[in-house]
Length: 172
Image (cartoon, rainbow, N blue to C red):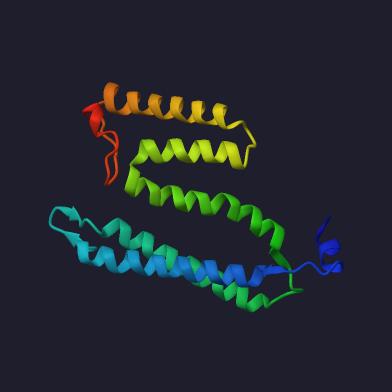
C-alpha cells in the first residue's frame, strides 16, 4: 500500500510535519543543554590549550543551528498534503519493542545488568518470537552466563549488578 492508497483509505496517524517539528525542538533543547553544560566546564581557550568544554560547546552549537534550520525549513514548507509519518498499526509495532526496552533499562537499575538481560531476552523470545518458554529461558541463561564470565572473570571488568545485587553469592 503506497502513500496515495493510505490517504485514499483515510489512514490516520501522526503527521510528518508534527514529528519533524517535535524532533527538531528536542534536538535544539539537547543542544542548549550541551552548550550551557560545556560553559560550566570551560569552553574557552586556556593556557594549556582548549578547555574541557571547548569541543562539546561547538557540538552543542552545531546541534542548535541544525535543528533551528530544520524547524525553519519545515515551517516554510508548511503542512503539505497531510502526509502521515506513522499510522496506528506502525506505532503499535514500535511500542511493542520500545516499552519492553524501557522496562529493561529500569530493571537494570534494580536487578543489575545480567539478571535484567536474562529476563529481557527470555521475555522477548517468548512474547515476540513465539519460542517455547523452556528454550527461551535456556538461551537467556546461557547468554547471560557467557557475558558474566567474559566481563567479570576473564576481563576483570565489573558491570553494574543493581541495587539488590542478586549475584552477590558468586563473590563478584
